[in-house]
Image (cartoon, rainbow, N blue to C red; front, side, top):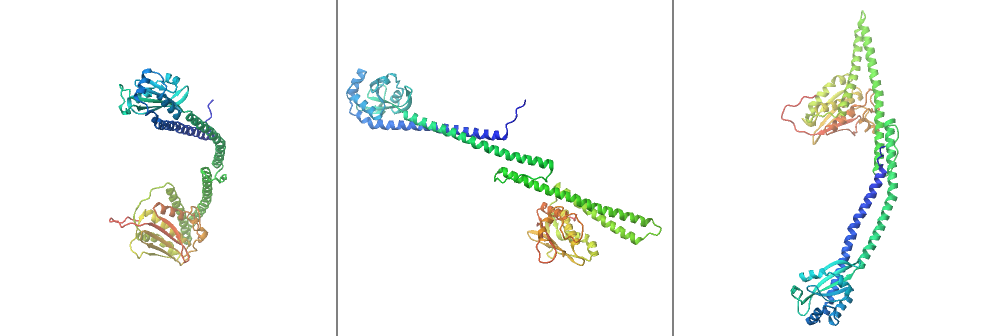
Length: 497
């Protein structure tokens, strides 16, 4: 039977616990070892200072005293033993006076001297320097110090194997305080470590459980969204942490999906209606036209009227197809061209396309390009498409006999503006009209799908520019397309797409 993988809560608690234990172990290794070394070094340094200050009692010894003691080979009462005993009282350790080669002259503890190898004394004899080390005696830690001394006119630098004028003092001082101090610190550290681990478990388990519970709610909400659609709500998590941010992001995604779903439904309903209406009208007009033409005396005027109305419906269907094609290209992120475009020439070409529609409604259109040729960096076809969208909207909302103006402005960021004298845009719709499938309330009774301005803004942004609705003091609306400026090319101008 396959084992169930460890859950997130177990992994979090385990990771925190392992991290805590590892941190405590590293801290123990980094603290206890150096602490013991530092305490031992301090004890050895103190011992050295005590020995150095007590060497005065050996200055009064003569070489004869030491020769007698060396000859006897045993502890001798008198000045030598008194100096050794005085040094022991000062240092608190066992003192032995040795001559080379390891001849014991005097000692304060005969028993300890018998079992001591005095290896440090040999090193002190040979180097002429004090040797400090640590060892154990009867299971107890001791600090060992072997320091050479000169008696009877000698000097430690004159140490030699054949000289008995230089001697070594070997001191063995128990240091139970170091072990006791380390033991106290170790005990306190272990106690603190256990308390820290317990506190980690006490705090970590509920925290991990809360985190997992919040994540589980988000997972359940995501599953509900996948099964039931974006209309279902997402639980609110107001915590200011990563999970709270995730919950708010999921809620934002849900709202956007819901808005897109509503927009899709609105588009389907609008497109169905807008498609059904012209198609029905077109079918009826063609049927009437067929009846007129089949008669023995066809009514040509009525036939021409029906034909013109049929063409209007066909153009309406063509605009819808063009909008849907533009949307599909934008969503597919088809790469746009980036080249110098002369806005004056392009504007005149596009305005010529609208001459028939504007003349029928006695709407005049003019181009203000007194500044001369103005070059922008962009895709010629996309710039022309944006201008067509703006002019088509202006023509549809402008009353008969009004005027539409296309203004060109140069500079670091060139601008192309379309001004009309229609009903304008209400303040609460200034941002909404650039969203897909949203139509303004004042459309002059003209049908549409609410796609033109959304397409125009996305095309402008894809070319590194922007499409905005500007504030004006005059009636109507003023839409401005801003694009990066460009220099006139040396080659022939590119024809408008």
